Each structure stands twice: as structure tokens, then as C-alpha cells.
Length: 297
Image (tube, rainbow, N blue to C red; front, side, top):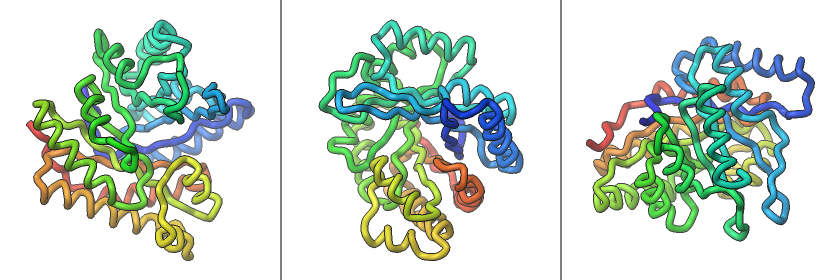
């Protein structure tokens, strides 16, 4: 199975120590905002995990399955839940989590993620192993993360595709390179292995101020000095929306002109609740630019 959608909207769960009233207000605010966003087909809920120097996790936000279920019931839209599978206690712990997520929570779409460092030995299954394990007897859609600047990313993508990942969401993009190079290399590897390429959801987010920008850089987003200067021009949110439109146009044209046959979609990230309105403006802008790229047969 794969995700049959063109636009995802990513919203961060509230802090787990927030009051129940505050959590309800967050759900209500997002649901009300999305009520007029017909182009948003799925809500993408990340799992926010911090790691200490030993690679041990700390969860500061509401569990993603819980938050996603509330949003689905309130909005009527389907959801995607992210899970850092490497932080499960072991293989059996992952299986129990998945059984609850697909059973009690009735989640059908997932994005499996790894750890923050290649230097740690994590207790849970790898992303590839978790994908294979989950698809043994589950009719679900599983995606993974694409980090364009990571070494040998196209090789990582093909391994995950062979394991069963049917779509990928990128790291937040502020330039077209090196993603175009990664996509071309990935398609060549798919042809070599005789597998269908996964759908690629290009991730964008509005930037309101320097604090937003600093947080995105902390998350690992690649932002050049020129891009940073542009994004901090007044009004900053308009600059980030226009930059996203330029990147989308450049990458979609590259896929089309190179005849890569890789399906493309958009993942707009809200990240901060103060950027909710700007994120929906970004959705509206990008939704008007989508021209579906026929996937490979």
C-alpha cells in the first residue's frame, strides 16, 4: 500500500505536561483551521524525541498516535503517524506498539524514523527491519525520511524501498540541491533493481523570525547564508512561501524533464502554532502549482 495523496499537513503534538484544556484548545484550533483547507488530504503527526549523549530518548510531547487519533475524529481527515522505531525497547516492544496503533488507534499510515546519531547502539529495530516486520501481515502504508545532504542517500532509499517503504518525506527544504541529484541516482538504482520508486513528499515550512530559523537549523535543515538573509527580509513568511514555490517548481521540472517517473507530493510543516495561518497560506500557494508526475509502472 501507499499514501494516495498530494498534500500532507504536518502538525506537532502539544507538550505532554500541558493541561487537558490546553491540549483540547490545540486540537480545536488546528481542526478549525483545516476545515477550509480542502487540498490537505492527510494530517502528518511527527514524534518529537530528544536524545541525551547516550542516545537515550526523552519524550516532551503528547504521544503521536493519541494526538493523531484526536485530529482524525475532529477533522474527518486521515492521518500519518511517525515513530522513531529504534527507541523501542526491543523487537517485541515494537510489535506491541504496532499492534496497538493499527488496532485500538486504527492507524493505517506510518513513517518510521531512526535515531539522531550513527554512533549509538539503539535497542529497537532499524528502520528497514521495522518496515519489513510491519508489512509481514499488515495492510498498511509505510514511509521513511529522506535527508538530501546525507552521504549515500540514494543507496539508503533503495534499501528502504526494497524493504517495502512506498513513500518518503524529505527534511525541510530550502534549496533544490542536492535533492535533484539524489532523485536521479535513486531512479537509476530502482531501474537496476527492478522496483517501483516510492513517492516523494517535499517538505516545506514557513519562517516567521530568527528564532524559527535557528530552530530549523538545530533540527538539521540546510540553510545557506544567502537563503538565511532572504528569509529574514520583511515579511519573512512571504519570503519562505515564495522560496518554497521556487524549489517545488525546480524539482518538479527536473523530475518531468529527466523523465524520472517519480511521483511527487508536498508536506507542509506547521512546527509552531504561531505559524499555523502562514502554513495554510503555503499550502494554498503550493496546491495551485501541483501538476501530477506520472509514477513509474
